[in-house]
Length: 301
Image 1 (tube, rainbow, N blue to C red):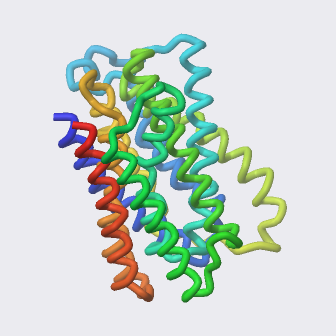
Image 2 (tube, rainbow, N blue to C red; image 1 turned 30 degrees about the vertical axis):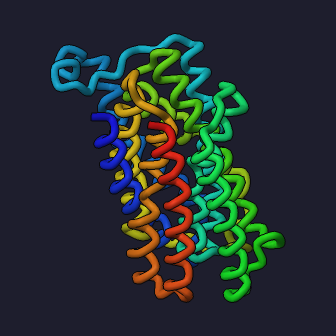
Image 3 (spheres, helix red, strand yellow; image 1 turned 120 degrees about the vertical axis):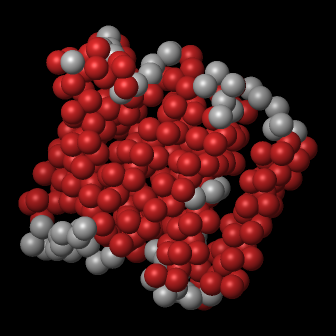
């Protein structure tokens, strides 16, 4: 069952990525982050309030958000800081890079999740897993070659650096999710509702500090209908994902692979929508990344 939940999450994440690219084209990044996250909070607030006002009703329909200890709220603040840092890096990179460059780099997240499992939990990768990682790193090199054809020098581009940082920080978030939901015993809706709420405080502070005072000197903010779509699709994708991860049988590496396979949606549909170049060459390199990811998954069964 948890595998199917990972696949559903993948589909919604693909649409979420497309909504991000549309919202960020020629737009100010921090207000987009703030208002998209505010949409997520608006979707979760009725559950938080309803769980206090009518707990029996929400328990009956499976949307009850149980109270949490102060220590658990502290972990939610940590989760919000991790996710907020990853999103800021990823959104700035996505604004300045083609989605057909960003999506494959983000798709490599499972490799870093595997590396985290080795370093933190002392897991030993199988030979196929090492082979999968080697293939993916080779594909990174090929993407750097293609990037130079579009004027993007991988080792000098700060935007490529940001998307790599976003991917690494997102890996920390994935490993943290497993610990919160399986080891600590938090509920999926507890994590979802409270980390979105603390993210709202985080983005309010960052937007007010960095963007508002300089809004006349930087890229102007334009409201687009895709901005609330970002928050909406993310709530659905994360809700399904957290339910899957909370299953004791769920493997975080498999869930990470399934979620990052949303690259198939964002890569092919996004490239057509945004008229990007070198698509045939990028598709071959993307196939190599997916092959590497597939080898990691198969070796873990």
